[in-house]
Amino acid sequence: MSAKWKKFLSYYRPYMKGFITDMCLALIGAGTSLVIPLIIRYITGTVLTNGYTGAENTILLLFLLMLGLLAVEFGCNYFIAYVGHMVGAHMEYDLRNELFTHYQKLSFRFYDDQKVGSLMSRVTNDLFEITELYHHGPEDLMISAIKLIGSLIILCTINVSLALVALIPIPFMIVFATILNRKMRRTFKKNREKIAEINTRMEDSLSGIRVVKSFTGEDMEIHKFTEGNDMFLASKRDNYRYMAIYHAVLWCITGLITVTVAAVGATMIGKDALTLQDLIAFLLYINNFTEPIRKLVNFTEQFQNGMSGFERFYEMICIEPDIEDAPDAKLLENVRGDIDFTDVTFSYGGNPTREANVFSHLNLHIDAGEYVALVGHSGVGKTTICSLIPRFYEPTNGTIRIDGKDITSVTQKSLRQKIGIVQQDVYLFAGTVIENIRYGRPDATYEEVVAAAKRANAHEFIMELPNGYDTDIGQRGVKLSGGQKQRISIARVFLKNPPILIFDEATSSLDNESERVIQDSLESLAKDRTTLVIAHRLTTIQNAKRILVLSENGIEEEGTHEELLKKNGVYAGLYQTYS
Ligand code: ADP
Ligand code: MG
Picture 1 (cartoon, rainbow, N blue to C red):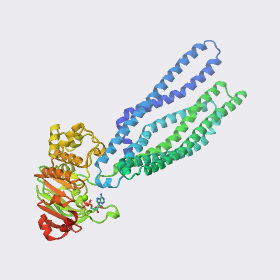
Picture 2: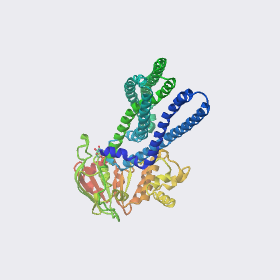
Picture 3: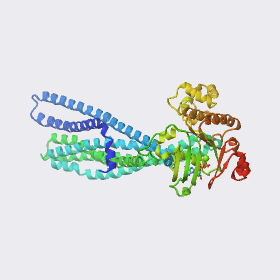
């Protein structure tokens, strides 16, 4: 058995009890539904032909028996629908958890190439198809097989020639149902794609609603949306047309079988080749016979869909995170904060347009507790250098060490816990102020959060918010100003309290006043920690003891502000442009 199949079947394991109960009930339900027509045949035949004396009692008994059987069938149907679906829901729950957990493990490089919308649709749409197959598949197969084989055997024992008459339309029915099922599934798939498109459009448009309005793009958005919605309608039209033909024709074939059997059966009764009770039994069985065929045809399609959904799931699960802890990775502890880049070469790789190295053979040393500024033209690779330290990306070549320990020899978790990053675009989660600050350390007390907020110069404005620390800040913090968001993100880092800090253009998008306040809190945060600052406005880093100037050739210049200005090189050029 292939690994994929093993994985596919493994999801049944925790729910074997429920699944087996479901299958047993399906077996019993299908069995009882086969017995009832036999009892009716017995009543109409044996009981009635034996004369009426004493028949009432027998009939009453058999009636009660049939009521009992119906009750059993009712119970089975109820539990199959309930237990079966719950088994499916549990399996879907497991699949979804596994996929989401897997998403959390994948690295930056993976997300660089993905659309959030499509990752989400894998968690919602694809999984539904799989679980439908998981519980309906075996159930339908079982019920259909029993009903089909059982009723076929019973029909043949009653009368072979009449059974053959009932069988004639069956091949046509199978061919027709198969063809139409395929067409319907195709339109269903198209429908889902259209819905996914509509969702992606809508998400994009609503997330960017502020841009839409500022460019007065509402009409264009509505137009684009309506286009997608129209396509949805068109695909629904095909969908329902096929569905209407399918149901009408299958219903018609079933009717045709009934009518033909009735006519042929009546003729046979006339010739004494058949009894009335046999004809009645026959007619009662016809449904037991056509319904499983419909279900089996359905199953082949369900199987294909479910398996292709599972393949998409499996492919995703098989993607190994490209950065993993070494098997013997240790915890990074008691960090002083020396950072060393030795001969580091890096390229984003994978995509031809990114083949070029962002930098090659870079050497860099930062002492523990040092405050170092990194400057250079936009796109030269400053952010990239910073994302190598927490191991968001792996260098193509060379080593990066913290306190002399290769960062690939320690766990990513312990490494990242020691590094605090403040960036230009702040990402805040939907929720309250306190929840967002606590992201820095989930077990922090209220007092610790307030202390962190005070040090980040955020306490005052937070207290002025309608609900203080419990104020809801809207999706991505839309209810706050840029400077306020940045102060919350700094409070988050204060709470985390890491020995190494990276400020990546943390104040670049702010107005002068907020910049000054935030510059203050950044400086108090940087105290006694190793700090790497990237600044766009060079005025903010003039006081740095050491400024590194990055160019296409690596670290091109190094020194204090005054020394570098005297050199009259790259730094002096940047200084004239940006301040
Ligand atoms: P800086 O921060 O100095 O402005 P970056 O480090 O962000 O520059 O980018 C350096 C180069 O790498 C740029 O040419 C940019 O286009 C490219 N780059 C940045 N991020 C990615 C990414 N995720 N995938 C591919 N290329 C990237
Ligand atoms: Mg940058």
